[in-house]
Structures are given as C-alpha cells and as structure tokens.
Length: 364
Ligand SMILES: Cc1ncc(COP(=O)(O)O)c(C=O)c1O
Image: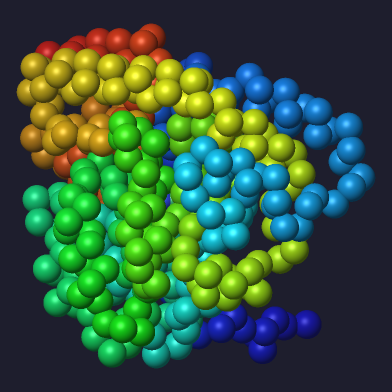
C-alpha cells in the first residue's frame, strides 16, 4: 500500500521542526545543561511534594476547569481568575491562539529574533508567518507597525525576549497595542517576566484593552519545564474563544498540583530571581572582561558575541568538551552568538573558566 494520497494540509511540510536545546555533549561527558533556560535550582520543594502526592490518584482525570490553579495565579498576580486559561506549557496557549485567530490567507507577525514557536504555530494553523526586523537586537515597534496590514491577525512579542534577552518599555508596548489594525490581537509573551523585579508582564495593559493577551509559563523561574504547564490572561472574549479550542483535560493533575504549589511559594521564586540576577551580572562581567561582550539581559540567559560565526562554533565545541552544553543560535540567524543559561554558581564559574581558556587559544 502507498501512503501517497494521505497528505498533510498545505504548508505543514514547509514547517522547519523546532530544534530543542541539546542535553548531551559530544564525547559523552557529564553534562551541565545550559541550553534551555531551565532553573538550575529546580522547582520549589512544595511543588515537588504536590507532584508526588498527585501520583496517589493517577486514575482520576484532572479538573477540566483548572479552578484551583487559576485561583492561585489570580491571588498571587492580582488578576481575575475568570480571564485565565491554562495549557500544556505556554507553547499550547500560543498554538490555541494561532488555531483560533489565524488561518489560510491570514498573517501572524512577530519580531525578527522572536521565539521559534510563533512561526511554527502560525504555519500549523495554515497562516503565513511574517517577520519584522529588529533594531540593535531589540523589538522594533515601528517595524512591526509598518508590517501590519489587512491580513494581520496576531502580533507576537516576547518581553523580555528570547534569545536576545532584551526588553522594550511599557510605553512602546502600549504604542504597539494602540497602533495595530483593529482585527489583530497583540500577544505579549511573558515567559521570562518573573526574572524582572516588580514586573507583572504588562497585566495592566491586558486589563485596559480588549486586543491584548499575555502568555506565561511555569517552565522557567518556577522550574517545572518537565511538567508542561503555562497559562494565558486576556479579555473575556478571547479566553472564551480559546477555551472552545482547548481539550478538556489538556493539563495533567500532577502538573496542576505542582504549579499551584509553586506559584504560592513566593519566597522561593524571589530567591531564584535574586540568585539569577547576581550570577547573570557576574558572568556577563567576566565574559566581557575576556572580550566576549553581551547586551544587558532581563532574563535567565545571556548572549555573548564572538568575533565570528566560526569562533562561536569553536567555542560551542570547546564548552562541550567540558560538559557545558549551551545554545547555538544559527536557527535565529545569530551565527556569531551563543546563548548561555544562567546556571548555579558552579556552572557559571565553569563557563567563565572554559571560555577564558578558549580565548587564550584552547580548542576542542
Ligand atoms: C519566549 C518563550 N515563550 C514561550 C516558551 C515556551 O515555554 P513553555 O511551553 O515551556 O511554557 C519559551 C520556552 O523556551 C520561550 O522562550
């Protein structure tokens, strides 16, 4: 039998599959994974305990309305529980948004160095992804506004952004929200919002407007990447539409329980934010002092620049010989940069030592 007549929807086979951060080093060394912006300290112990406890009732379907988690998020962030939707990672919320608002003939706009899942989800929905260029590795609101047209349905911005680590001002975000066409929805991806002291991911803008949605995750500062849980916050009309696309049991009971405990352990989240900021600035200064500058980062990673794409590739290979796995950025067209997640103190010191050796001439 041939499967030649069984064909995916138009455009599906044009999708370049997402390349996840590596978790192995060449040569099979013991690995410190600094390629996926995970929390080196792991989740709150309360979250782990809740996850383990959930194993006691694996036969039961999860609460399909995510009531307790939405209430906990609403309490901690000062939001309305009825306008929150939970997903299997914020990736799933991104996918819901594309499936709900974009299809063939529509455009999904995002910034040049925007997160790779935006074009993937747009294409999966049959829509056309459109990139607006960035200025100096920052989201450029004028370029985004210039790229809008009657086909634009969604505009995705991560603030702070991955992989650049940069952030634009609340005023610029508000200008974008006010300037996009009336049929378009602005999605503010706040995957890294908790790393910025006192920043609520533009929640006030979401509440003030009916064309802005925010996506958030438990995968980064909360250390629950493996549990796959994230959420979105938006106007009631958007949350209502997304809930029609969402499967009733899209999030596991264990993930719901872990996230609920994690979000309430505010002291632990703050401890992680402070440690990240301390070691991020330390590593950034160390690397700058050996000729590897990186722009200010508002996240849990930095993006040092090498003198050439070849130097970045050689440094990547050298780090791997030391068991340090970082992220090459060829997929983003940032060939002379590497993205390095801020690990714990031992990992940061190991990266600084290895790159110092590399800059002095050591090679893989
Ligand atoms: C900017 C941004 N948005 C969304 C995500 C998706 O995270 P998750 O699906 O784990 O919530 C990531 C993960 O790396 C990210 O960097």
